[in-house]
Image (cartoon, one colour):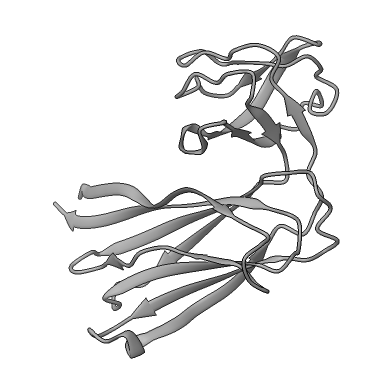
Length: 203
């Protein structure tokens, strides 16, 4: 049976998709070169950064691909949407430690449902933020994450729901891929991120 040689990385670390600066503010990743990859998958994440009601206004996402060396060679591979729903938040009330699965909160009234909610743990230092899946809780004390936390989170950190995670598979015939996020709402803000997995060899 063949084995796959795989690599992973970030095309964009956690970045603010703001509500100001232009009529439709945007964030664009750099280009990911796809030289001899056999397969490529992007994982796009759009997470609420506040509890403003976006009133069905959406985040628009353009995944673009290129064959060639010129800027005019970029073509839209697909357009996607995310967001558009008001988020709920709970603040941490004690430090949550790295390598532990407990996320300390004063109230566990929003996600003590057993529905395996996917939440954005927004750190005051944005790049230290992470995603968690709630698999348990202790009333008015903490949530239990499915996996241990990667970072230590101070009390300034908050949890938000309404997280969109969108996988996009890119065919091997393209030379590069990039992603553009646009925020169509005037006050709601988001945090966005793009990770990638590549298959580089079959051995």
